[in-house]
Length: 146
Image (cartoon, rainbow, N blue to C red; front, side, top):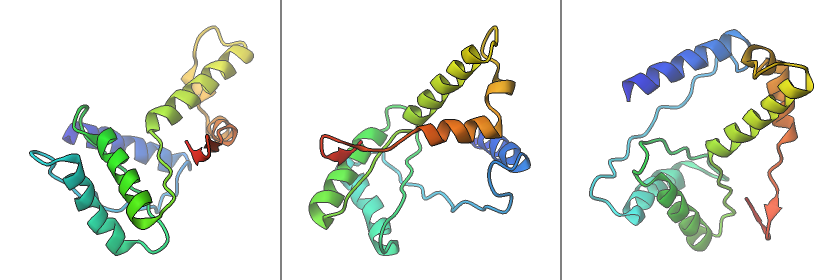
């Protein structure tokens, strides 16, 4: 919604100002998919029409939406279809997993550096965030990326 878009833009502007992301970066436009009354297969097929038409060797697909609108189910359908129909290797993850991991690393950093409580200003510097992200690995689990 507009409120989330406004908050996201403020965060992007701050990140650009601090040099966390390239100040000249312009993200691609969102593509809206109306999911109302559609099955997860229909939603996945609509997304795949676009992805298959535009990508040569790979693509990144980001799903945004309200809780309970079928994002997780759609991701599972996309993964299934890309693997079975296209023979593609598919890696999926949730931003929630990344944020939880970085939050844990930042809280641990605060404990190790004598902070009385969580101190976002000290813990979430550009250098610390880069360090925390370098600690995360995406590996195969039971023979597939997870």
